[in-house]
Length: 216
Image (tube, rainbow, N blue to C red):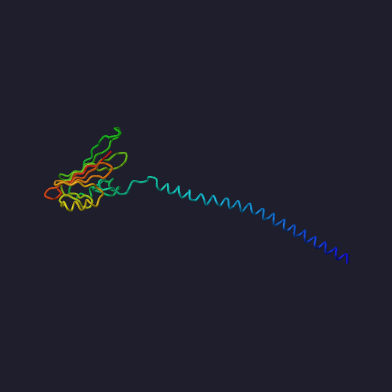
């Protein structure tokens, strides 16, 4: 009887020891895993926070000044609206529907005397178009146009020979200041460089168009 009681006590003691060891192992394993999980959570969180910064840098890069605008305002060039086309003499030639001549004259750069630029002059009948071409920029800037015949039309098909009411209707499509008298209609810039486009009238029709641009 005493032998059976002794065996029972030993069994219970052995079972208690095993349960204690098992609890210690579980506690140790959990303690070893938790720092790693916490570390992973800490490393994941900065990654999420860093994403908006990258997107912000991309947006800033897009907003930086890039290529020039693809189109020109009306008083910037009353003949051509496409910026790339305005840099080509052929674009002007294509709009003239009569015989013309071209002269190219060297001129001293107004800011750097050591550099020679070019003045291109297109003539057709009594009409003249004058373009200034800075050597360094490759631009072709319209500075003067004096149109006395129907050999060329402006944008929106404005030309010598059209009626005064038709001209007024077409001008209202552009952002310009309009001054009108019995003998002429003047379109000037609302703001920015001082440019003007004058339409001279005779018998209620346009008989001459003169453009004066601004070249710096």
